[in-house]
Length: 113
Image (cartoon, rainbow, N blue to C red; front, side):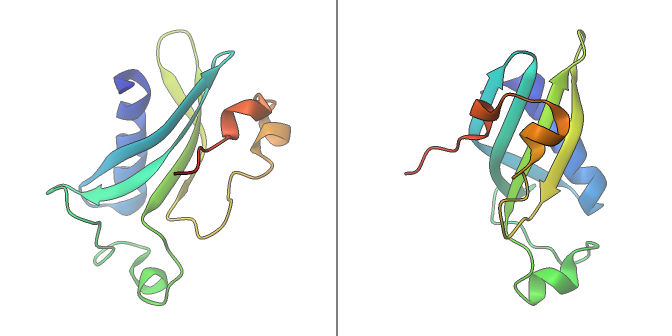
C-alpha cells in the first residue's frame, strides 16, 4: 500500500461523490515524481459502492458509471497533489494524460489479471 498517494485519492473520491467512500487499490505506478493510481471504489462498509445520493446516481443507474477510479498525482515535494482524475469511468479516461500533463507514459500501464 502507498498511503502517501492513497490518502489524496480518498479525499478526491469523497469530494466528487459527496458521501463516504473508500478506495481499494489495484495499481499504483510511480515514476519521476508522478503517480498513476487505479482501483475500485467501495463503500465505507467495504461493500461495492452504491452511487445513490451522489451527483452520479442517474448515470450509474443507466450504466454510465463503473465502480473504478483513476487518478494522476504529482509529488509537490511535501505531498501528492491531484492533477486529474476519473470517478467511475466507463472508458480509458486517462488516455492522453501523459501527453497533456507531461507524465511518463509507462505509469499508465495496468496489469491484466
